[in-house]
Length: 163
Image (tube, rainbow, N blue to C red; front, side, top):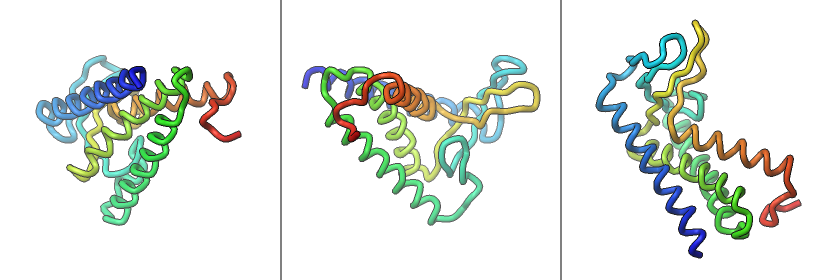
């Protein structure tokens, strides 16, 4: 249980970073404006995303889509939390990846519940090509998912996942 506490601490730390970065962006950069940090490559751009990761469904103003997004987030969060708690203590990389996903999912869910949207601000681009704007929570989810995929393809399957 002591080791699990370290992972819960990591989740809390990442969640705090996520919420702080979103608060700083919303207070210091006007909505739909950018602050150029690395010319030709990286901006901080304040946008509100009502949709899913990378802006999927973000143009929808439907309350059904908003409720569906929260339900999907809750289902994913429940699934991740189940495997987070069920995994064996020795499966550190698995628990670490689930911690990242859990922190990101919680960060974005908090925004959806209390604001109705998620604040995105990390804007990478080359010339006119922009990667979809994202936030720290999305970064955590993506890195956690990449590690999880690595585990499934290059290591033996964790005991807590069915064969």
